[in-house]
Length: 310
Image (cartoon, rainbow, N blue to C red; front, side):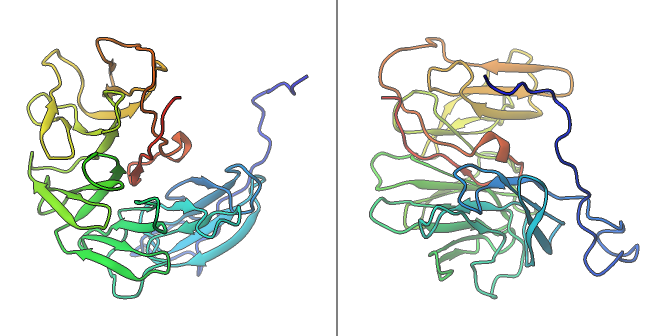
């Protein structure tokens, strides 16, 4: 018989002390203990499940905890906003990309979104990073920079199969701060193959499996005039109806269970869900593997790896 869940607290621990002691009021953190800038779950110990926890302060220090909240290790680096884990050496234990830990010291600004992805089946994984004012960066797993595009303040990258006519996976990024709304599309080698400016502000580019076929779209936002979904050619493929829906926030996930995504939009007062007119449909459908929901963040790099339901 399965052990009954009670909802009672199993473990608790304070966050780490602010490194170097409590800083002055002019510092970034005026508190005795760090407030915690993110949670990220991964498998650092090779247990077969994501039971280890990564926490960090704003930009300098990172801690790894086990599932009983005991500190495994701590380190100092240019952390950026949000980590990404991947078993690079295939030893059953995750390696952790935190900011520019695998990059060289030529990169100065912080990381706004990072991931480790196998863009082509016959190649090693590559690291990509939207690096704020440093642009968009692609490296090998040893940290050697393969492509570095100085294209503005880049954030919120996403990787998916946006084009069947191109080998491997593609990436998309969008600019914030000073040159908002410019979108770049990259092939599997990290080359820019298209750019366009559909609006004049930044938003996340979330992969969208709308059709159940192998090419995905990406959603910018739910605004009637300036939002919508786009394809890998930079063409708008879907508008949101002018039906009074909220457009402050949006997310993409399969809610109904037919493998295709729904689009969830909300504000503090309402939440709406959009789905296909023929939902659900049977048969073989595209079912990509995405970031785990427990590792979702406003600062994530969205990764959507190919897969099918049959």
